[in-house]
Length: 348
Image (cartoon, rainbow, N blue to C red; front, side, top):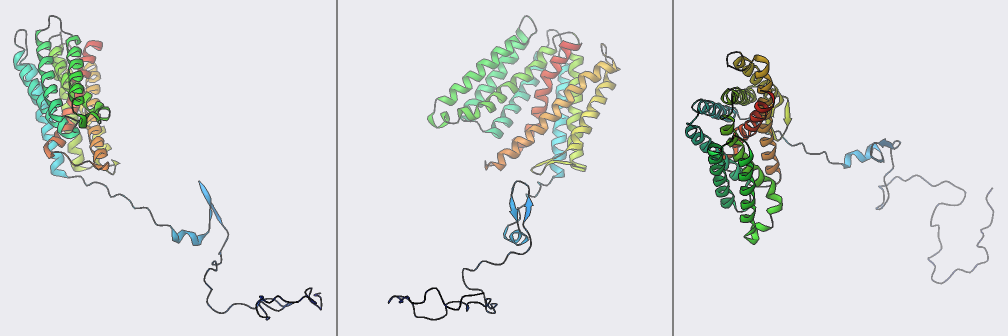
C-alpha cells in the first residue's frame, strides 16, 4: 500500500527548484517501457551469463566482437635452388677437406695446412659479414692472423697437441677485443658482440685441429670417416629441405626436421660403411665416431639458420647473400673438426 499523501506535504519549495511536474513515472505504477532509441550514455544490455576463461576475468559473448584477432606470421618460403646450391657447397667443402687430409704425411704437412688456411679465410669472411661485430675489419684481420699462427703451431710443434692452439685462440680473442675498445663508437657494443667475436676466433682455430689430428696415429683415417659423415649429413639435410621441408621447425627458419634427422642417419651409415674398409676401424667404431660428427655438423648448420632469423626479426639489415649462405656449412665443419679430434683421442 502506498501512502495517500506525500512526505513532503507542508514543505515550501525553494525558489531555485525546477518547476513542479512529474520528473519520473507516477508513484504506484511501474515505469513504461522505452520505445525510442537509447539515450547517449546508456549502457547496452548484457546478453547471457558471463563466461570464465583461463588467465583472466570472465567475459560475455558480446565482448568477443571487440577483440581483434592476432595476426599470424606467414612462414618463410623454402627456395629450392638455394637449398641445392648450399648442398653442393657443403659437398665440395667436405671433398676438399677429405682429399687434402690424404696428402698429409710425415714431413709433408704444408699442402694440407694450405687447404685448411683457405677454408679458414672463407670462414672469417662469411662469419664476420654475417655477424658484423664492432670494428669488423680489425676482427677479420686478427682472426686471419690467428688462423695462420694456429696452423704454423700445429705443423711445427714438437708434440701434436692442442696446447699451442689454445694459446693462439686466447691471444687472438684478446687482440680482437682490444681492437674493438679503441674507438668509442665500438666500445659500447663490445659486451653484446663478445660472443660473436669468440665464435669467429674459435672457429678458425677449430679447423687447425685437423692438422694436429693428421699427426697422430689413425688421425688421417679418423679425418676421412668424420668429415665424410659430416659432409654427407649436410648434403642430405639440404637436399631433403629442397624436396620435403617438413615438419617446419619454426616459421621463420626455412628448414625441416626431416632433413636434420635423415642427414644425421645417412651420415652415420656412411661412416659405418667406410669403417669396414679402413685399417684400424670397425663398422661399430666408425659409426660411433661418425654419428658424433654428423650430428654436430647438422645441428651447427641449423643453429646458424636460427641465428640469422633472429637477426632479421630484430630489425638488423640482411648481410651479404653469399656470406649468409656459406655460414652454415662452414660452421658445421668447424664444429665437426674438434669433435673428430676428441672422438679419436678418447675412443680410438
